[in-house]
Image (cartoon, rainbow, N blue to C red):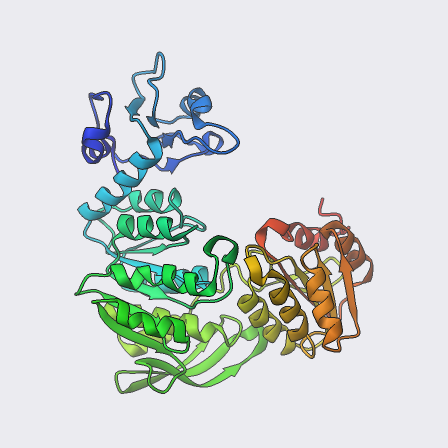
Length: 460
């Protein structure tokens, strides 16, 4: 983690005042919400749509902040607190993250894609951690604010940094690649997500392709061989290209894939003319691609194929498709973290393999732009044969219900609000039911999960 003296050094000419008596002791953390400040933190005061962090400087100091990155000089600061006063705290934060990254010896892996970024980031970090010291960007630290904060966590002890890049638009992707300066770049896929921001699938491909395009000539572009839009990004990079996937021409590929339901998957891993058998607890055959991308980076780091196979077999399952038990004994598959057409279809495939009365609770998928109606209807049609009962939740999800009806599904309910669906499920689900719960995070279906887990179904 960066120290006060190092922060002053990387900000240099941006500082409007010259802080003195700076220490080399690292900050404990970098925080933008004063309510989360702990002793020894650097509080960055940012102006947002709803409020301005400068209103909470006193609160941050009271909670133990020892550094403030701010555009105003606070009054009467205690001697234990240093103010770094700049014209634009956000630009200063980004400069600090970029400069600090260049001073560290850690190699940086950057990854992007329409879906699968989080699980791939987790898998890469876990495999590398078998032999190295790894800093992994925290959940959702993938934006113009989160990425530089994650990079400021690097220290001399780290061999690798694994960073997720989740741009809002092309300009932000250009910023993220410039800040992270990755040496290895992974692109998982290109699909109809965030079209409300990106505009089209073609624009999505262009924006995601900025990652391999930014890599140095001695870097490595790890690209999904099974996705034509990703595969052709090989022409956009000067780096060496490593293809992964099920395609016979992939450098790292899988054969003999078998699903074992909630007990995970197994397959044969092929790379460099060698092969190894893999059995892993991560759920769903779509997660083979996650494992292959992680294996590609691990091979570049020098791990043996047998060690990689062992590591994949020990991967933690993360926050997706998390099995939980409801108050009534029903098995819940908690996947309320996020949703896009590709990931919802993959979750439905997992549900289809499980015994019991299969119920899919699917909510709105956001930021699909012009593809919104078609994508929701497509998911509804895809549910046929993969769930016994379809519960659609939210205004956009009406399209899921309509798509299911049109495709021949005869057990469908639609609810305008999540609380109404929760009440129905509380009354009706039982020990023989398997319930998949998935939607975009803004739908907050995690509250539905917690309500169904609670002993009285209320969530309290």
